Length: 177
Image 1 (cartoon, rainbow, N blue to C red):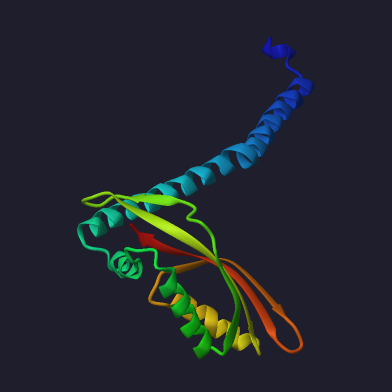
Image 2: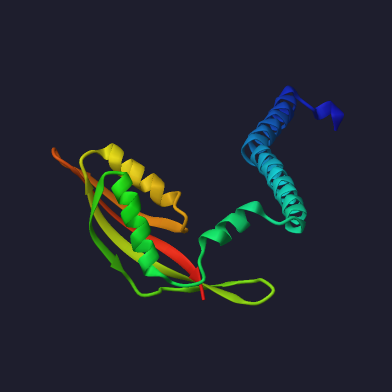
């Protein structure tokens, strides 16, 4: 049988070997290499999540400073009067005129786990205001976010005219009770 081996068979064998190597190369770069990269990114994500879990386990033993400062900003009563007075003081220092303030009914109650179960309720307000320039609106918004009461702004709509700037926001205040 070796006597019958010709150049034609040799070229065919070399062609099959080259074709096999080409198919392996294509499959390596299109299948194996991307999967290896995906495995590497998954390993990085897993190690990142493990680090976050260990950090959160360590921080659970210590009182969280951010939580204590936020808990000071959440009163025990709804007190919309305090919200209105606070907004009026902020508006007067920022040279902003409040045209409308409206309040919606409490939308949801969030359960919070402590020694005793407390309900964190929210109240949604909408506000329309005007100012002479955009800088006054920016000062007003930054003071709202830094106020003594926790206020989270949901939507902001700012329209600037030649003479004045119009602001429409909706925000949430929280209280326990």
